[in-house]
Structures are given as C-alpha cells and as structure tokens.
Length: 191
Image (cartoon, rainbow, N blue to C red; front, side):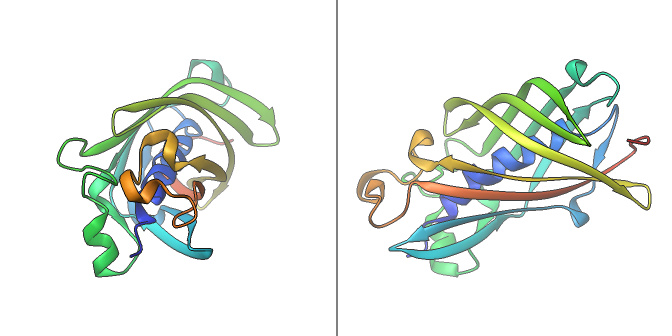
C-alpha cells in the first residue's frame, strides 16, 4: 500500500511552517497558489504526495526577522498519495492517527536572515503528539504583489511515530522524507 503519505504529512507540516516564517506582518496565506509536496520511498520506489488543507498565522517584517511569530497547522487527514487505498490508510492509528491527532502544528522560535532573501526558520514541529526542534531554509521572492516562500528539507518519519508497527520497517517504507514547498503570501510589503 502507499502508506508513505503519512510521511508526507510530516514533511508537509514542516514545509508549511517554514512558509509561515518567511512572511511579513499581517500576511495571509493564499491556498490556491500554495503547495506542499513530499517524496518518500516504498520498497525503493519513490512516492509523491501532498497535503490539501493547511493554515498559517504570520507576523513577519523583513527589517526585524528576529521579532517574527509564525504558527502553522496542517489537517493530518488531508494528506494524499493520490490512490484511494493508500489515502484510506493514512488517517489510521499506525500512520497519522487523525482521530486522536487531527492536526500537526509548527510554532516558530527564531527567524534568522541569511541574506539575499533567504532565511532560516527554527521552531517546534508537533506531529502525533511528538515534538521536535526543526530548522527550515526558506527563500522569498515577489511577483505581481504576491510573495512566494519556497524551500525543501528532509525529515525522519519515525521521529514522529508515523508508520508504527509493521510499517516501522524502513525496508518497506523509507524513514527519510523530502518535503518541498511553495507558499504564496498576500499582504506583504517589498522585500
């Protein structure tokens, strides 16, 4: 089964959270122009998925990145690998346990300017009640009044207990998950 979507949710959560960190004060996420995808491997074969539902509360000023506040939530049940049988497994207890943990979240602790429109957002990612510190690189760009935060990072799904029991076997589903994101933000000033 394509159970790898659970890993994708974890990756998505981190990506979405990274996106939040790169916005300016009182910005709004533009979901229709945003995407969070993930790639993992099942029995050595790459699987791609994405998250369909997420939200962010962002307060960010490029002149004062150290004062940024970023909070992000992802509906765990919105993870999809695009196959009905896999998507039916993801909400179950072994994967995202949506009944007990309907959302994953990220809360920023620091945002560091790296120069050239690039930032490192650090904070706490919570998935299935498991909290881990993460660092997410984010690049900002602007076009037509919309700021885009993009980047990618790697996660270990087992750190968040995604894919428990028989699915903890990394020869079946890889522990590594690559998360990619492109998040559109409205209401930002010039970078």
